[in-house]
Image 1: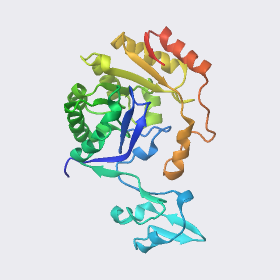
Image 2: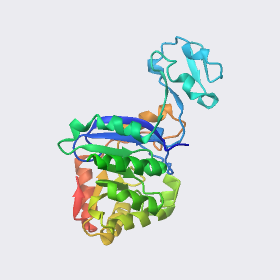
Image 3: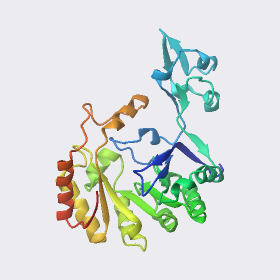
Image 4: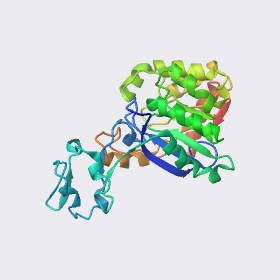
Length: 302
Protein backbone atom coordinates (compact mmCIF):
# COMPACT_ATOMS: atom_id res chain seq x y z
CA UNK A 1 0.00 0.00 0.00
CA UNK A 2 1.11 3.56 -0.67
CA UNK A 3 1.99 5.77 2.26
CA UNK A 4 -1.54 6.37 3.49
CA UNK A 5 -3.03 6.85 6.94
CA UNK A 6 -6.43 5.97 8.34
CA UNK A 7 -7.91 9.00 10.13
CA UNK A 8 -11.20 9.14 11.99
CA UNK A 9 -11.51 12.87 12.61
CA UNK A 10 -10.00 16.25 11.73
CA UNK A 11 -11.17 18.64 14.43
CA UNK A 12 -10.70 22.36 13.97
CA UNK A 13 -10.56 25.17 16.57
CA UNK A 14 -9.33 22.95 19.38
CA UNK A 15 -7.78 24.75 22.35
CA UNK A 16 -6.87 21.72 24.49
CA UNK A 17 -4.25 19.93 22.38
CA UNK A 18 -1.34 22.36 22.56
CA UNK A 19 -0.78 26.11 22.45
CA UNK A 20 -3.13 28.42 20.58
CA UNK A 21 -5.88 27.39 18.18
CA UNK A 22 -5.19 23.87 16.93
CA UNK A 23 -6.38 21.58 14.19
CA UNK A 24 -6.27 18.09 15.67
CA UNK A 25 -5.91 15.02 13.47
CA UNK A 26 -7.07 11.76 15.04
CA UNK A 27 -5.35 8.62 13.75
CA UNK A 28 -6.99 5.20 13.71
CA UNK A 29 -5.30 2.27 15.41
CA UNK A 30 -3.75 1.93 18.86
CA UNK A 31 -1.58 -0.82 20.38
CA UNK A 32 -3.14 -0.11 23.78
CA UNK A 33 -6.70 -0.87 24.79
CA UNK A 34 -7.22 1.26 27.88
CA UNK A 35 -10.45 0.34 29.65
CA UNK A 36 -11.23 4.06 30.06
CA UNK A 37 -10.24 5.10 26.52
CA UNK A 38 -11.49 8.61 25.71
CA UNK A 39 -11.50 7.88 21.96
CA UNK A 40 -12.61 4.25 21.61
CA UNK A 41 -13.41 4.85 17.95
CA UNK A 42 -9.66 5.16 17.40
CA UNK A 43 -8.61 1.76 18.79
CA UNK A 44 -9.30 -0.59 15.88
CA UNK A 45 -7.03 -0.04 12.83
CA UNK A 46 -9.82 -0.69 10.31
CA UNK A 47 -12.65 1.34 8.87
CA UNK A 48 -16.05 0.48 10.30
CA UNK A 49 -19.65 1.30 9.49
CA UNK A 50 -21.37 2.93 12.48
CA UNK A 51 -25.02 3.72 13.12
CA UNK A 52 -26.48 6.84 14.79
CA UNK A 53 -30.09 5.91 15.57
CA UNK A 54 -31.17 9.46 16.43
CA UNK A 55 -30.45 10.56 12.85
CA UNK A 56 -32.16 7.63 11.15
CA UNK A 57 -35.34 8.33 9.13
CA UNK A 58 -35.88 4.64 8.22
CA UNK A 59 -35.90 5.47 4.50
CA UNK A 60 -34.54 2.04 3.59
CA UNK A 61 -31.89 3.31 1.16
CA UNK A 62 -29.20 1.32 2.95
CA UNK A 63 -31.12 -1.95 2.55
CA UNK A 64 -30.56 -1.74 -1.21
CA UNK A 65 -27.00 -2.98 -0.58
CA UNK A 66 -27.28 -6.74 -0.61
CA UNK A 67 -24.46 -7.78 1.70
CA UNK A 68 -26.73 -8.58 4.64
CA UNK A 69 -25.20 -5.96 6.92
CA UNK A 70 -28.38 -3.88 7.26
CA UNK A 71 -32.06 -4.70 7.56
CA UNK A 72 -35.14 -3.08 9.08
CA UNK A 73 -37.14 -5.04 11.61
CA UNK A 74 -40.11 -3.79 13.66
CA UNK A 75 -39.40 -0.20 12.62
CA UNK A 76 -35.79 -0.47 13.78
CA UNK A 77 -32.65 -0.55 11.71
CA UNK A 78 -30.39 -3.48 12.58
CA UNK A 79 -26.70 -3.23 11.67
CA UNK A 80 -24.12 -6.00 11.63
CA UNK A 81 -20.97 -4.13 10.55
CA UNK A 82 -18.97 -7.36 10.36
CA UNK A 83 -20.94 -8.31 7.23
CA UNK A 84 -20.02 -5.18 5.26
CA UNK A 85 -18.20 -6.34 2.11
CA UNK A 86 -17.36 -3.01 0.49
CA UNK A 87 -17.19 0.04 2.74
CA UNK A 88 -17.38 2.32 -0.29
CA UNK A 89 -20.95 1.17 -0.94
CA UNK A 90 -22.09 2.96 2.20
CA UNK A 91 -20.16 6.21 1.86
CA UNK A 92 -23.03 8.19 0.29
CA UNK A 93 -26.02 5.87 0.67
CA UNK A 94 -27.59 7.42 3.78
CA UNK A 95 -29.34 10.80 3.19
CA UNK A 96 -29.58 11.61 6.90
CA UNK A 97 -26.05 10.63 7.91
CA UNK A 98 -27.27 7.94 10.29
CA UNK A 99 -24.96 5.38 8.67
CA UNK A 100 -21.36 6.56 8.28
CA UNK A 101 -17.92 5.12 7.85
CA UNK A 102 -15.95 5.93 10.99
CA UNK A 103 -12.72 6.85 9.18
CA UNK A 104 -11.06 7.65 5.87
CA UNK A 105 -7.72 7.00 4.17
CA UNK A 106 -5.52 10.02 3.40
CA UNK A 107 -2.28 10.48 1.48
CA UNK A 108 0.34 12.91 2.89
CA UNK A 109 -0.07 15.55 0.17
CA UNK A 110 -3.86 15.43 0.49
CA UNK A 111 -3.80 15.91 4.27
CA UNK A 112 -1.15 18.63 4.02
CA UNK A 113 -3.35 20.65 1.66
CA UNK A 114 -6.30 20.30 4.04
CA UNK A 115 -4.22 21.46 7.03
CA UNK A 116 -2.73 24.40 5.11
CA UNK A 117 -6.21 25.90 4.81
CA UNK A 118 -6.12 26.61 8.56
CA UNK A 119 -2.84 28.53 8.52
CA UNK A 120 -4.55 31.93 9.02
CA UNK A 121 -5.72 30.65 12.43
CA UNK A 122 -2.20 29.60 13.44
CA UNK A 123 -0.64 33.06 13.23
CA UNK A 124 -0.94 33.68 16.96
CA UNK A 125 0.69 30.49 18.24
CA UNK A 126 -1.59 27.70 17.04
CA UNK A 127 -0.83 24.73 14.84
CA UNK A 128 -1.56 21.09 14.14
CA UNK A 129 -1.78 18.30 16.72
CA UNK A 130 -1.67 14.59 15.92
CA UNK A 131 -3.65 12.41 18.28
CA UNK A 132 -5.54 9.15 18.14
CA UNK A 133 -5.59 6.30 18.57
CA UNK A 134 -1.83 6.41 18.34
CA UNK A 135 -0.08 8.57 15.71
CA UNK A 136 3.02 6.36 15.78
CA UNK A 137 0.91 3.29 15.00
CA UNK A 138 1.09 4.71 11.47
CA UNK A 139 4.62 5.97 11.93
CA UNK A 140 5.78 6.31 8.32
CA UNK A 141 2.88 8.58 7.46
CA UNK A 142 3.12 10.56 10.72
CA UNK A 143 6.80 11.35 10.22
CA UNK A 144 6.30 12.30 6.58
CA UNK A 145 3.46 14.71 7.40
CA UNK A 146 5.43 16.21 10.31
CA UNK A 147 8.28 16.98 7.92
CA UNK A 148 5.91 18.61 5.45
CA UNK A 149 4.36 20.83 8.12
CA UNK A 150 7.71 21.95 9.49
CA UNK A 151 8.82 22.97 5.97
CA UNK A 152 5.90 25.39 5.79
CA UNK A 153 6.45 26.55 9.38
CA UNK A 154 3.32 25.09 10.98
CA UNK A 155 3.69 24.39 14.71
CA UNK A 156 3.35 20.66 15.43
CA UNK A 157 2.32 18.61 18.45
CA UNK A 158 1.93 14.87 18.95
CA UNK A 159 -0.08 13.08 21.65
CA UNK A 160 1.36 9.60 22.11
CA UNK A 161 1.50 6.61 24.44
CA UNK A 162 5.13 6.14 23.29
CA UNK A 163 4.43 2.43 22.95
CA UNK A 164 6.51 2.23 19.80
CA UNK A 165 10.02 1.65 18.56
CA UNK A 166 12.58 4.14 19.91
CA UNK A 167 13.96 4.63 16.38
CA UNK A 168 10.56 5.97 15.33
CA UNK A 169 10.52 8.50 18.14
CA UNK A 170 14.08 9.61 17.44
CA UNK A 171 13.22 10.13 13.78
CA UNK A 172 10.15 12.20 14.66
CA UNK A 173 11.51 14.37 17.51
CA UNK A 174 13.27 16.99 15.34
CA UNK A 175 9.93 17.81 13.69
CA UNK A 176 7.77 17.99 16.85
CA UNK A 177 7.38 21.28 18.70
CA UNK A 178 5.52 19.66 21.62
CA UNK A 179 5.39 15.97 22.45
CA UNK A 180 2.64 15.00 24.91
CA UNK A 181 3.55 11.57 26.30
CA UNK A 182 1.29 9.53 28.57
CA UNK A 183 2.62 7.83 31.69
CA UNK A 184 -0.60 6.27 32.92
CA UNK A 185 0.30 3.65 35.51
CA UNK A 186 3.59 3.01 37.32
CA UNK A 187 2.96 -0.60 38.34
CA UNK A 188 3.57 -2.86 35.35
CA UNK A 189 1.05 -5.54 36.34
CA UNK A 190 -1.70 -2.95 36.75
CA UNK A 191 -0.65 -1.33 33.48
CA UNK A 192 -1.10 -4.66 31.69
CA UNK A 193 -4.47 -5.24 33.35
CA UNK A 194 -5.89 -1.84 32.42
CA UNK A 195 -4.22 -1.13 29.05
CA UNK A 196 -3.40 -4.58 27.68
CA UNK A 197 0.36 -3.96 27.41
CA UNK A 198 3.44 -3.71 29.62
CA UNK A 199 4.76 -0.24 30.41
CA UNK A 200 8.41 -1.30 29.99
CA UNK A 201 8.78 0.14 26.47
CA UNK A 202 6.84 3.25 27.46
CA UNK A 203 9.09 3.95 30.45
CA UNK A 204 12.25 3.40 28.39
CA UNK A 205 11.01 5.82 25.75
CA UNK A 206 9.93 8.45 28.29
CA UNK A 207 13.37 8.27 29.88
CA UNK A 208 14.96 8.57 26.44
CA UNK A 209 13.00 11.69 25.41
CA UNK A 210 13.51 13.33 28.82
CA UNK A 211 17.26 12.86 28.49
CA UNK A 212 17.40 13.98 24.86
CA UNK A 213 18.15 17.39 23.36
CA UNK A 214 14.39 17.80 22.91
CA UNK A 215 13.44 17.28 26.57
CA UNK A 216 12.06 20.80 26.97
CA UNK A 217 9.60 20.07 24.17
CA UNK A 218 8.12 17.17 26.14
CA UNK A 219 5.09 17.18 28.45
CA UNK A 220 4.37 14.04 30.48
CA UNK A 221 0.69 13.44 31.16
CA UNK A 222 -1.30 11.20 33.46
CA UNK A 223 -5.05 10.92 32.87
CA UNK A 224 -6.82 10.88 36.22
CA UNK A 225 -9.11 7.85 36.08
CA UNK A 226 -10.96 7.02 39.32
CA UNK A 227 -9.92 3.66 40.80
CA UNK A 228 -7.31 3.16 38.05
CA UNK A 229 -4.69 5.94 37.89
CA UNK A 230 -5.92 8.63 40.28
CA UNK A 231 -4.34 7.52 43.52
CA UNK A 232 -1.54 8.96 45.59
CA UNK A 233 0.82 5.99 45.27
CA UNK A 234 0.65 5.91 41.47
CA UNK A 235 1.09 9.66 41.04
CA UNK A 236 3.89 9.84 43.60
CA UNK A 237 5.91 7.07 41.94
CA UNK A 238 5.46 8.49 38.45
CA UNK A 239 6.40 11.98 39.61
CA UNK A 240 9.49 10.75 41.46
CA UNK A 241 10.72 8.73 38.49
CA UNK A 242 10.28 11.34 35.77
CA UNK A 243 11.76 14.11 37.95
CA UNK A 244 14.84 11.90 38.49
CA UNK A 245 15.17 11.46 34.72
CA UNK A 246 14.86 15.22 34.20
CA UNK A 247 14.40 17.60 37.15
CA UNK A 248 12.82 20.23 34.90
CA UNK A 249 10.23 17.87 33.44
CA UNK A 250 6.82 19.35 32.68
CA UNK A 251 4.02 17.23 34.12
CA UNK A 252 0.29 17.56 33.47
CA UNK A 253 -2.61 15.81 35.22
CA UNK A 254 -5.67 15.44 33.00
CA UNK A 255 -8.97 15.60 34.83
CA UNK A 256 -11.33 12.69 34.26
CA UNK A 257 -13.71 13.25 31.34
CA UNK A 258 -17.16 11.74 32.03
CA UNK A 259 -18.34 12.57 28.48
CA UNK A 260 -16.32 9.71 26.98
CA UNK A 261 -18.82 7.11 28.17
CA UNK A 262 -21.40 8.21 25.58
CA UNK A 263 -19.10 7.10 22.74
CA UNK A 264 -19.31 3.48 23.83
CA UNK A 265 -22.94 3.27 22.67
CA UNK A 266 -21.57 3.01 19.11
CA UNK A 267 -18.66 0.68 19.88
CA UNK A 268 -18.15 -3.00 20.58
CA UNK A 269 -16.21 -2.26 23.76
CA UNK A 270 -17.24 -2.23 27.40
CA UNK A 271 -16.60 0.91 29.43
CA UNK A 272 -14.80 0.58 32.75
CA UNK A 273 -17.58 2.25 34.76
CA UNK A 274 -21.20 1.22 35.05
CA UNK A 275 -21.87 4.32 37.15
CA UNK A 276 -19.97 7.15 35.49
CA UNK A 277 -17.96 9.25 38.00
CA UNK A 278 -17.96 13.05 37.80
CA UNK A 279 -15.08 15.40 37.09
CA UNK A 280 -12.69 15.91 39.97
CA UNK A 281 -13.35 19.14 41.85
CA UNK A 282 -10.92 22.04 41.97
CA UNK A 283 -9.93 21.05 45.51
CA UNK A 284 -9.37 17.43 44.53
CA UNK A 285 -7.16 18.57 41.65
CA UNK A 286 -5.16 20.75 44.04
CA UNK A 287 -4.67 17.68 46.28
CA UNK A 288 -3.31 15.73 43.30
CA UNK A 289 -0.99 18.62 42.40
CA UNK A 290 0.41 18.66 45.93
CA UNK A 291 1.21 14.94 45.71
CA UNK A 292 3.34 15.36 42.58
CA UNK A 293 4.96 18.59 43.81
CA UNK A 294 5.97 16.88 47.06
CA UNK A 295 7.44 14.05 44.97
CA UNK A 296 9.78 16.44 43.14
CA UNK A 297 7.85 18.02 40.24
CA UNK A 298 8.67 21.72 39.88
CA UNK A 299 6.96 22.38 36.53
CA UNK A 300 3.31 21.46 37.00
CA UNK A 301 1.01 22.34 34.10
CA UNK A 302 -2.38 23.44 35.37
